[in-house]
Image (cartoon, rainbow, N blue to C red):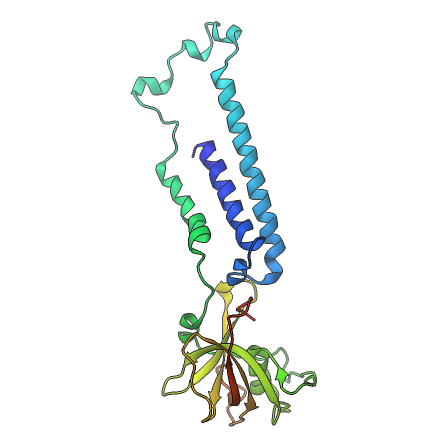
Amino acid sequence: MRREVQAILLVLLGTALLRISLFSDSYLRYVRAALQPYLVATGVVLVLLGVASAIATVRALRTDSNPDPAESNHPDHPDHQAAPDEHHGHSHHGGPRIAWLLMLPVLAIVLIAPPALGSYTAQRSESTTVKPAGTEPTFPPLPAGDPLSMTLASFDVRAVWDTAAPLRGRRVKLVGFATSRKGGGWYLTRLTISCCAADALTSKVEIRGSATQAPPPGSWVEVVGVWQPDGRTAQDDTIPALTAAQVTRIPEPRDPYE
């Protein structure tokens, strides 16, 4: 690949990283917030490398266009010898055109900005409630609050694996997006990531209650209700149920993952 092409790609890729991580919250669609400093640092390094490569290329071109007269008159100077490419009638200096395809990911980030994982992914994924470490896991007391604000993943873990059942009778407030349930009804759903969207796990809560109408799939809602124990516990694929007293439509959170 030509050095000038490398410089352009490095600058564009670094600029794209800085655009989504420093000048917007778009990076939260793909990675955890804790990784922002690393993305910014990587973007800065790529831009600096691209600028340095461009400067070196310009200097090399100026040197080639202004050779030393003393050297150019020397019989051993390369100008007095036929260039290898001239014997073949064409030049191999230009890199392969396929190298420009490396710009496609950059253009995708800058122009398209793929959305965060949402209802399409969750609808095709099973709910996973991983058992905490230990044969008999222990849990800290639940904090005060009415309703008690919890993440969906934390609610699932306490409802499925906490044998003391501290959620019994407690009003809780959960935030997520709606997904359809086979056979009728709907789930409140949220995706949890450890590092990036590639390792996302799905958490679901079955929403019950005759007073609550199912919102459109993919819409973000805040649900206030009470855990409905039904004996489905101690299994990774158990989906707890919540009897909802209030369902409120809300805008998508800044960080769509837990």
